[in-house]
Image 1 (cartoon, rainbow, N blue to C red):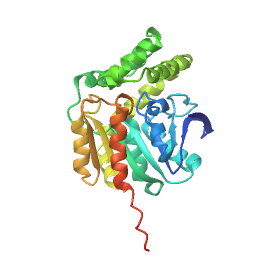
Image 2: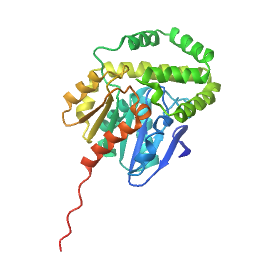
Image 3: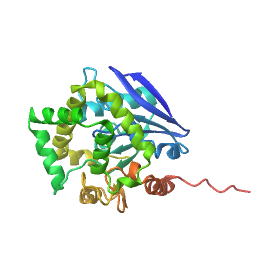
Image 4: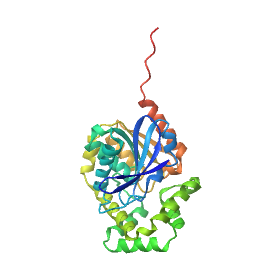
Length: 294
């Protein structure tokens, strides 16, 4: 696992997990970072050349006069694929990263070989009451910034990470302590960013909310030509399972794998189940070698 920096209109941090074969770019969700993939990337790197990006304003990628909106980070992802990977790639995206993967596959189909959407941020008809409250607070200009900055100031990094984990996982006790510690350390390092932390999060939150609600999103879904797998936790309260079922109802050629008892970040909470679902689907994508003729 190597940490690297590339200049794409400003510094962009990514993790190179190594591997050989076709390239795969992993894209984290809202408030996430490239470390979100550390429990599954090494196994996937046995079949792909795997890299995971920190989107602008998240992880170790600063805003640097950029925006953290979905549109801006979708452009960053495409720039990364073109410049750093340099050839068509598989996209694996969680939550907002899944939404971005759909946008990239729709707008640049020749650059995307396949999509793996992990609890993707797609339209939700009946959001969970907890998410309704969070969305309401974020939507109020001024208040959101004050509340978020106070939360960052008052909570120590470990408490903050554990509160986030409690929201996005069904059973936090499943998660490897090493993964939690890595995220605590990153949160500690990001403490010096001050208002940039809240600015990026709020920009992205408001942007993904608007994108999910816009009817144009379904047009983007229809434009995707890449083979697509949707992996979704049955106990996800951020993006309920019903939203994923509606997604594959509109795209019956896509494959849905439901992970029972798992929340919004299955690659962190249940990596073994996640990898099983991914590799089973991957096996159906591999064309058998023709039998030798004697």
